[in-house]
Length: 131
Image (cartoon, rainbow, N blue to C red; front, side, top):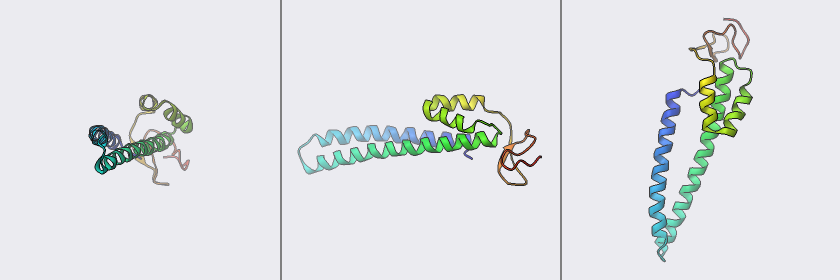
């Protein structure tokens, strides 16, 4: 399960990448306006950078959805799939709502199945064995 600090580092890197892509892409598109082979190559590179950004955003969304589903299950929430769908359709707003609504507490490792669960839970949501 991803920790909050890891998610924040990933988001910071994504913002930095977007800034580099926008600045670099603007320069490359300006070079592409010239009628020579270097301009065409720069335009192709800028387009592939944009496609790479779209693919990275898609992968990040899938990673966030998987994290929400796993975290909701580890916290004993019966509606893990519904939370995942909410985050999928509402994006960052749904993720913020989930982070405020989810049960708070320390996560510990279950001695039976070795999955994470809330320390305050009576039984493990993964294997059903009591604490």
